[in-house]
Amino acid sequence: MWEVTPASPQELADAVRSAAEDNLTVKAVGTGHSFTALAATEGVLIRPDLLTGIREIDRTSMTVTVEAGTPLKRLNAALAREGLSLTNMGDIMEQTVAGATSTGTHGTGRDSASIAAQIKALELVTADGSLLHCSEKENPEVFAAARIGLGALGVVSAITLAVEPVFLLTAREEPMSFDKVTAEFDALVAENEHFEFYWFPHTGNCNTKRNNRSAGPAAPAGAVSGWIEDELLSNGVFQVACSVGRAFPAAIPAIAKVSSRALSARSYTDIPYKVFTSPRRVRFVEMEYALPREALVTALRELKAMVERSPLRVGFPVEVRTAPADDITLSTASGRDSAYIAVHMYRGTPYQSYFTAAERIMTAHGGRPHWGKVHTRDAAYFAEAYPRFGEFTALRDRLDPQRLFQNAYLRRVLGD
Image (cartoon, rainbow, N blue to C red; front, side):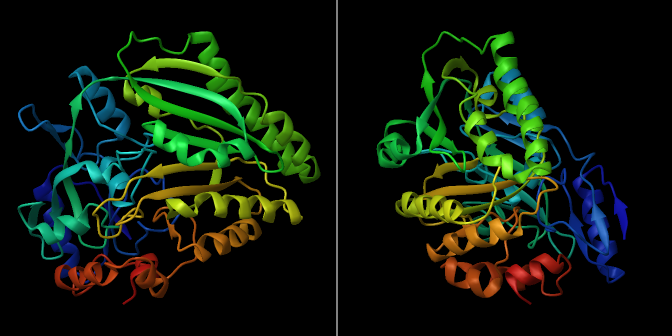
């Protein structure tokens, strides 16, 4: 394997053509945020470190065109300086724009969907080295699939995203019991633009977060109180708790009861990316499934019952988010309003038994796993889970018949 760091779409296209001539496979990698081997290759590895920055801001169409390797954190800061913002985003912004969109990275939203759903156009280097432009009007069949393309259709070189004038969000965080949040889940989703919560296994405790647009004024989290909540409690103390739990698994339920009560209610108002995203310094392994939204409460209660009757000791909270249906071929929310259940284990802790049991529950409800997180599903499963799966694989056959962008992960999830 060797690495290439192109500095322009033309250099990227040259690298793809050269690899094809040498019968080598090609994969692009972002920041390595995914838990799967989606970007692994034995051939040519494309690093987009020099494909960064904003190409154009169009205030008439309210779009921004950005190079594929641009980290989301740099994009968010640059947009804010221009008085602009994405409508929705995930809770981490370390990923590259192309890496985040290609794997279906999402936040939570009643009406606004994943980052990929905010794409208005993209530029793709295909297997023959061509630079293909696609949008709803130009190559629409490619656009429908390539927004979450898994790196299977080509290498993304640039993305055009919808933006809007920067706005304020008020975040309201507060503890809530598991029974209350599940009983009122539909109402909480309906009443808030962005609702999510964490359930702490071995307890009946949750922490909820509601983000809604605000007329202001801005009232950011205080420097001291914000540091206590986000760094000391959410990262520092939690890191210690996880380390103790890894060394003494029997202590995890007791630790969970303390941890789940550590965070207090708070409210703050700020620009979007400072509300949507949070520092995540405690390392973990994660599996996440998208379920039909109406199945969420049942599946979550089954997960809780499974943990309670098992010998498992789970020291990491379970995250629940939502997304509206979208029209992207292999989006986890494709064609249906969705809710996400993400299970985590602290890095270095055995996770297979927990994830296997959780996955059994998720798949029984027609779940679709996040493309960049741990799962065991294959092409036969996805052909059933995604009504448009055949549409994607047919497009792949047309754009990459020689499987230049193939690897072991794609062979498993898309088939040969």
